[in-house]
Image (cartoon, rainbow, N blue to C red; front, side):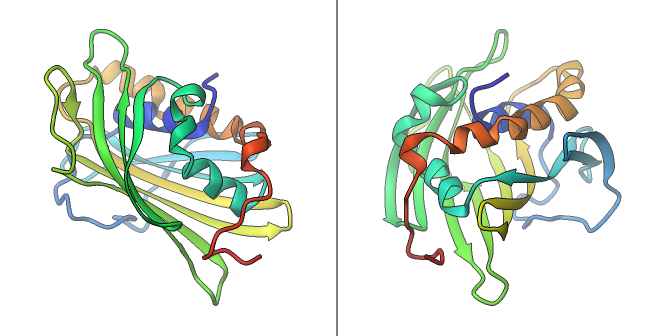
Length: 224
């Protein structure tokens, strides 16, 4: 099982989507037609075809023990990605705007025969004050870091976390993603990862959020 959620999701999602027809689309792109791929231990993984694509976009619904602050602390913790996150070749902060917006670079070590992938990600965190629902958006940004020979730059990434704190120590999460990984990926591997990758990722989330450096953190946009 991968050590942590985000890069396992990253690796699985690379195989799950061809380029969307309109790369400026905002998730979610459609409203229904989800197919249940896996339902185990309270984690439900869905897929549906992306218009104009042979592959799928993915949705995960689950409940996880932990707090929004712990989740945000992990996602914001770029310095620990290489030591803790599965198959990270390198990761570093490119630009931090504040505690709810930043840009970071990530290179993922891909298994042979595929080439490593990289991108610069723009992360934003927004809390709805009326509903107290947290939205975490991740979009790729071209041009901030030069492309490197032998590494394929991901041309399109869109993901959205919708997080609700349903008890003081339990969250309800919906995660949506679509990605164009660039280059070629084997379809057989894509099909194999549709359910297993996202499921294994979220199955390991609770242990991850217990790590000491994600405890007792505060953020300006979260209720204290």
